[in-house]
Length: 198
Image (tube, rainbow, N blue to C red; front, top):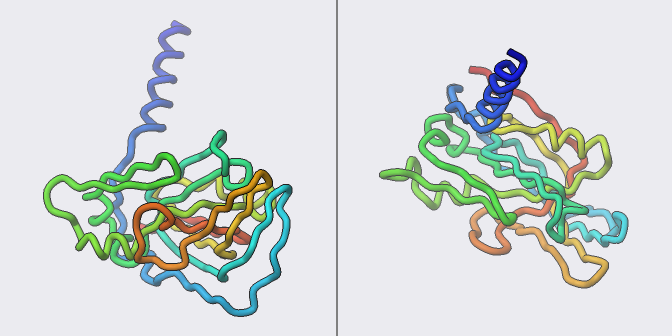
């Protein structure tokens, strides 16, 4: 009996982990585009062995299409999480339900079956993969608690990171680029997370 209960519990846990229910909210919960400004930036600073250079202040409200945890790649020590974010027309439930979204290797990809639910240019301009650098342990815990279809507001800085062994990791500063270098690298100083009303 215990074995049966264990197997049933494990099956339920796996279903909960992998099943992705469709989005069901109405309207456009993240209607505004990200806000970015280049004035009055703080001076470069250290985060452990990493040197961080602010490039722009940044605030974004978006629907989370996916969250991917990193532990072993070169950037994992400073950026443990990527969030695939959608705003504007990409935050509409019907649009997200027509896309298959995946994340790996610090990239996010999307696919559709027949016709795209939006013009591909609008998909590109209204979504992004964001490498998150938590400003402190509390922010780290808040970021790691984020789940698919949460509505989040992140505030902080777009930055360039210099690695102690050499090399750099630089944020994109535009929302209409694609491929390598198109992701935002964000020093996150504030997180607001909430479920979307249906």
